[in-house]
Structures are given as C-alpha cells and as structure tokens.
Length: 277
Image: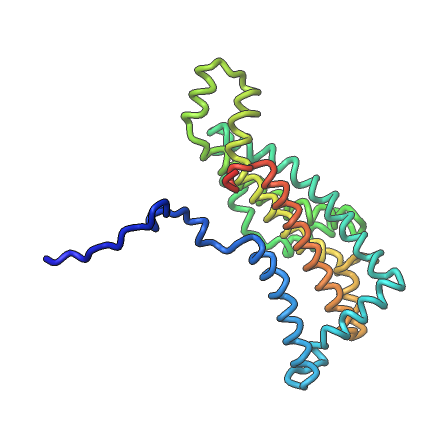
C-alpha cells in the first residue's frame, strides 16, 4: 500500500494535532462583538420591516416608537417606579427561596436517608406549573406583597434544591475519603469538599432560579398588584397601549440579561477552574 508522505513541520512550529483546541474557538473580542451586533441587527431589521409595511405595526410597532414610549415612561417616573417594585420583590423572594433550597439540597446530597425521604416529594411537586399555584397562593397569602414574594421564592427554591443535591451527591467519594484520612472535621468536609465540588451545580441552579423567579414575578404582578412590570404590562393591555407592553417586556429582558452577566461574573470568581485559570 502506498503511503502518503507528510510534509515536515517547520522548525519550531507546533504540530497541528497538538495545537490547543482553544485556538480554534472565537476570541473574546469576537464574542463581545457578536453579542452586540446580533440584537442591534435584529432591531434594525424589525425597524425596516415596520417602516416598509411588511409587518402589522398594530401588534409589532417599530422599535423607534417603543424606545420613544420608554423615554416618555421614564420621564414620568412610571417606568422607574414599576421596575423598582419588581426588583425589590425579586430580591426578597430570591433570598427566601435560596436559603431553604441550599439547605435542603445539601442535606439531600450528603445524607442518603434524607435524600430517600425527600427526593420523591421534591421531584414530584417540581413539575407542577408554578403559575397554576398562583390562585392557591393568593387565597393563602392574599393580594398584598407576601403572595408576590412567595411566588418568586417557589421559583428559586426548586432549581436550587435539585441542582445542589445533584452537585453534592456527584462529588467523587475519593475526596471525602481523603478528607477523612487527614482527620478533617465534618464542618471542614462540608466547607472544603462538598460546597466547592458542588459549586458549579449550585450556580446553575441559582441562574435557573433567578430566571424563573423573574418570570413568576411578572405573572404574579398581573393579578392584584398596583405596581411592577407585570402590572404595567397588564394595564397596558387593558388600554391597548402596545408600545407600553413592549417596554415592559424589553425591561424584563434587559434585567434578565444583566442578572445573567452578574451571576456569570460571580461564578467565574468562585469557580476559576471552569475557565481554565
């Protein structure tokens, strides 16, 4: 069989087979550029389609009119009032759901009897649509602030608890054995083995929980609220102010994106090994 001769590599050149894969990946600058150009390009296409009459502006108003309405709402103070109300409820509900979610997830991950007793209950109630619980929550907690906070807390609790339990349980037993052989106390095993090993899963659960909490707070504010982005969207629907509806949706999207960036930065600092540092 005839063998194809390979061209010798240049002196000092790195063989192609051994080049790091990361060199084939896009640079950070390119990623940031694409992150900006993609939404700007979509908005530009939307604007041109609206001006050309290719889409029905009664339901899809031009981005320029949406941003104009955003300026009007910001100048009147309505936008800031409703945004702050939603952020305050989201912040409180986040901590109300995070603390028990972490505690239960760690307990289920570390102790098999706890996991055997509670895993079916948590996994069984998790698929229930959280928005379907709103009537029951309103019946129990009323139309005031507690019902909104409970909705966010429920949305945060489940992803955090399930991801934390999975992360702690999936830490290799060899790390626990090494810690025990060196005489580590239970607190040190918990602090230096279980939590760092499960941190990627915990952060994933937090990211999912924050996103779900943001969705649920908008839904909860559409019923019985007098402030918030959900209230603003629902009120705009009642008076057929389509631009205001889009403003509310846009602000929610921006908040979600900024929170994702914040959580990503926190995750990169807490788990530097995930970024190859």
